Amino acid sequence: MREPSTTVEALDSRTSSWSQISRFGFRAALILLLLPTAAFAHVGSGEAGGFLSGFHHPISGPDHVLAMVAVGLWGAQLGSPAIWLLPVAFPMVMAVGGMLGLMGVPLPGIEYGIATSAILLGAAVTSEARPPLGVAAALVGFFAIFHGHAHGTELPAGEDALLYSLGFVIATGCLHAAGIAIGVLHQWPWGRPLLRIAGAGIVLGGVFFMWRAVA
Amino acid sequence: MSTSIALRSSRVLPLAAIALLPRPAAAHLNSTGLGPVYDGVAHFLTSPEDLLAVLALALWAGARGANYGRWALFMLPSAWLLGSLLGMTAAATAGGTVLSAVWLMALGALLATDLALPLRGATALAALLGLQRGYLNGLGIEQSASGIAALLGLGAVVFVVVAIAAASVVRLRAAWARVAVRVIGSWIAASGLLLLGWSLRTHA
Image (cartoon, rainbow over the protein chains, first blue to last red):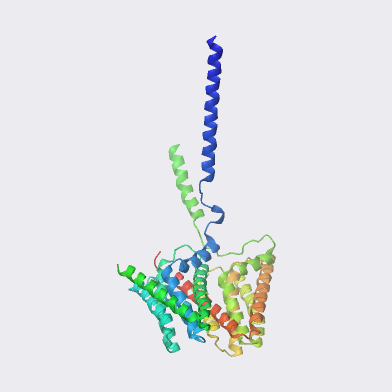
């Protein structure tokens, strides 16, 4: 009499364990499905990778972003011809610095130079400084060498050199353009104090980066 | 038996290693599957060092005036075709990244500064650019009927790019638009400078 009952119990227990196994399997499969994997479909190599990683490089460093936006802001405050001369001069001189960095030519005090650029350019925006055009271009060009050199030494090997460089330069130009676009506020009386506040913010950012470089 | 396997693998492994070594694609006329003319077109459009140099020269010629634009429009593709024909018959040599960088720096600076050159000088510059870049293009193209068709595609696309770029600048009057064109020149020159640094790179 015990036999059938035993069989039923055994069957029940087997069914229950199969059910447990299948539930475990389902959960495991679900977890595996949801596991993050590398997206090989758009791997960052080749020409697109070169351009995009070059484009990403200048905008990924807040110290560079601050200084480059400051160049645009200052250019907008100074008006023509500085508004176009500074953004034309900066990438070309920056590329000279980048070339030196790529070639392994050492330049001392890079981080100090970058932090000082944010402080001085931010101060120029805050005080609405109006030096002669040559002085403004020389100041911007001088600091562009530090930014370019820092980028040049950080550039990764194995990218498409020209596309990487193009992305890098275009991103820098876009940061200047962003600064110029914000600097349009200068034409309204209520916009001028806002720009000066923005300049003060850039000075504070520069002081922070200087403190970090010294510490 | 094991000695024979070891001997065979000692021959196969170096051969496999040599076969798998990455090499620069000297003959880089990629197949689009649309025929040799489009292969030539695609080759130009996917070679940024050629495209940027042509763009810089065409924009500068357009900014200098319609006459400069017209001379560039006919001189550059003709010289490109001639250079490609010369390149097709020559033995393949190294590509010359430094020379590409120098072209980009020079033409980008020309555009950024809006330098005034005499018409003859501008035409000679277009001829020189076409001959040199075309020659390098020709090195990667085989001597056959399809190679000639690819050259025609190359010449046609150079003509179209110069026509569009120069014509779009000739009529620009707004100061900001002309400044924007000069900014493009500074970007091209800066990219050339970085390319030069990259080609002279001494550390990894």
